[in-house]
Amino acid sequence: MSKSLADKFGRRIRYLRVSVTDRCNFHCKYCMPEGEFEHLSHSCILSFEDMLFACSVFAEMGVEKIRVTGGEPLVRKGVTDFMHMLTDVKGIEEVTLTTNGSLLEKFADEIVAAGIRRVNISLDSLRPERYRDITGGFDLDRLLKSLYIAKKAGLDPIKTNTVVIRGFNADEIHDFCDFSVRSGVVARFIEFMPIGNSPDWKQENIVLGSEMLKIIGEKYDYEEIKKEHHAGPAKNYRLSNGGRVGIITPISNHFCSECDKLRLTADGKLRPCLLTEEEYDLKEPIRKRDREGLIEAISGALCKKEKEHHVVADKRNERYKRTMSGIGG
Image 1 (cartoon, rainbow, N blue to C red):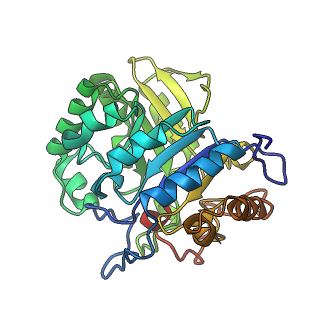
Image 2: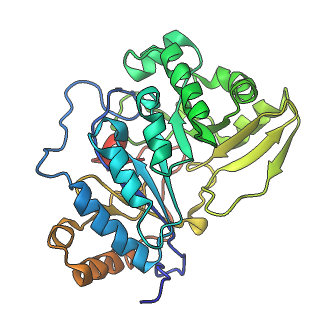
């Protein structure tokens, strides 16, 4: 088989995000809706054996990098063993992790032993009360302790992901730039997206990437850093204070032409694009270990991948049925 998985526009697919659960020990407002929230039933969730089979097929087709996501992936029992097995899948060059960071104190050594080095941590405020508010009650000092334990264990680079929301944390951009120096992490800023069915999302909440960069430039000089192999959509900058930051602009500056990723949800749906509602059920061929059937289903879904998403800053898309926790980010 030719190891060149591509969509109908010729974009090579090298990257698969695998959500291992939709459950999380946080309740972030932009990720889960307020009030009652119905999780996926256990019978719907793929087993780790299912996921390994699927990932091996994706690797045969050309995927080179896998990111393990959730929900919060570390709440699922046995996930570090799963990550260890992923690193052994032929054709996979790198396995990475996205986490809220709360359980790194417990699992950092196991994650490193599994062969993981790159970790992204959600961190939406450096102010204790704000952090407690956005996460649904978690303690910032405990999170920062986990972050430093993770660095000591050998996780590097560590990147923090901050969804910048006007009226909530947009006044902390300089704080994160300084935090990058103190902690040795890459602080990344993300435009606020209309996913999660949150009534709190409003157009005026968005801080566009160009404004973030302008705010950064009010205090620091900066230079853009050339992207590395397997780098994501962030534009990265080295600051005059010695810090490193990244800016991700899904709303104002679509990076669809560079898109090289797919998403596999915890219940076996293939999602070619985060910001469209289309998804394709792969559960049957995965559970039947039907390799040819799975290849056919993946190829068919890629043929329907759109050239670009249509989310813009001045219009909320009401079609989203999944929360971010259900998609896997």
